[in-house]
Image 1 (cartoon, rainbow, N blue to C red):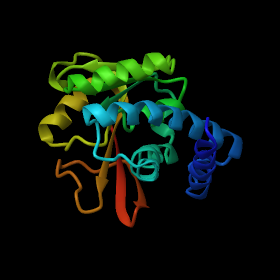
Image 2: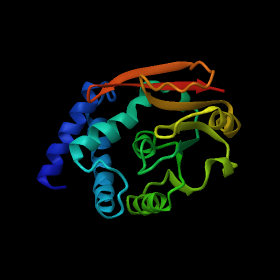
Image 3: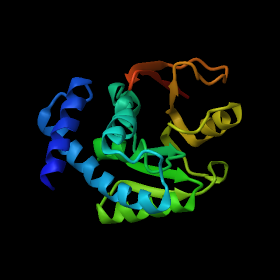
Length: 210
């Protein structure tokens, strides 16, 4: 890495520790380095293929990587999980950061955009991610069963909720990211929630167990 990347890695790691997302500085630094390697690939493609409007590393650390990691504050859904679906993964968020954190879990990154899944296939191969599997398919045509479904970008309505119910194993989880003023009206109370703030915006993560 360049000297600039090392400084950014240290800053990234300190931010993770200060937010309670890691307790161990060695693990935090390792995670930060892996994420910055991914960002190098992502940023290169983003300049040509417009994967995301976020192009600045400082913004990406907060709005992509750190935001993606907040479900780790409630680890119960992941304790016995083998397969996690990132529904509407876009450029790989939250699936890639979570896959780096939970290296023993397989992550299936689903998106309807061919250019995004093509990038994810390229980056996964180049960075040797053994637990990442990009899939280009409509969610309603996906017949696989997962232990956990994570949704950061897709708005959950009753139709998607019913599909999610049929796509998770018994006792499995649906994890939904939302702003505090944009809670899904699906007639179902979450089993757990995590509240946090990113860039002065209040966010919440809702955990539903089926």
